[in-house]
Length: 328
Image 1 (cartoon, rainbow, N blue to C red):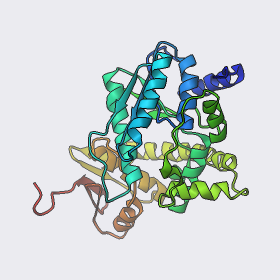
Image 2: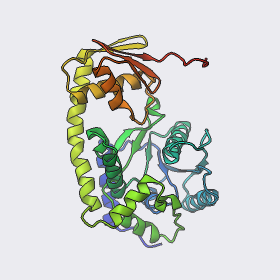
Image 3: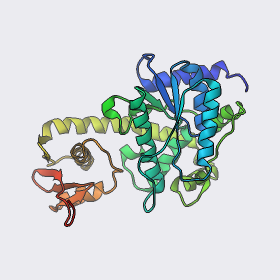
């Protein structure tokens, strides 16, 4: 294994501190390692950065015959490094129909969140790269996403399913290219797992990845920069929505009323989304259907989204939808 250069290590430390937004308190750190090039590069950097307080986990979705062997390969690497490692399995089987990759992602975060809470970890690091940012930007643009969807994924945010426990999700590699991370992983001599779904054209991300590989006029670094630029617009819009919530929203038990009169559509969307999340006890949903919901409310019609019934106003009223006929 070639030595890790001081320049690469110093860059990682600077990016980690920037993502964290505060001083490292020396608490235990967890990382998600799939066995792919990006995550193995993260493992190599993190082993040196967090010596003695690092733990790793691999989520085996059980969706491919090779997945158990790949998880064991990561376990073997961690054993040689002296890093505690766990192989995690989703608590709920991932099955069709539906978006399998989305289901797998949700199951992965849930498993990692449970693991983090069990080990009293305060943060989990993932190896999302600049290329992931560019791909996500184009995928969401193709679906007509708004500013929040197109903005770059946060470098530091609450860990899904473990926000109440204070666990944070940190992405310190958002300014690193997939190619340089791959090179960093290959220099170790460790076996690198290549998930065939990354090149399977039936998946949106694989098609976008192929498009970018064959479109020099769409460089990933410029797309990632566009996503970064939208972060500032997103922060401003969210600030306005938060201010509107303080003056326009009233929470009464399981009913939320919102005075949406004369507010810009984007602010109305954010207030409605916040009401839905709050009534779902903080559990998020993909956000699909929100524009349709706003259209219904604006035209004076009620609508149900993510288990929440919204009635037009004034004011708009949100409450858990009653069970459907035949459901308890």
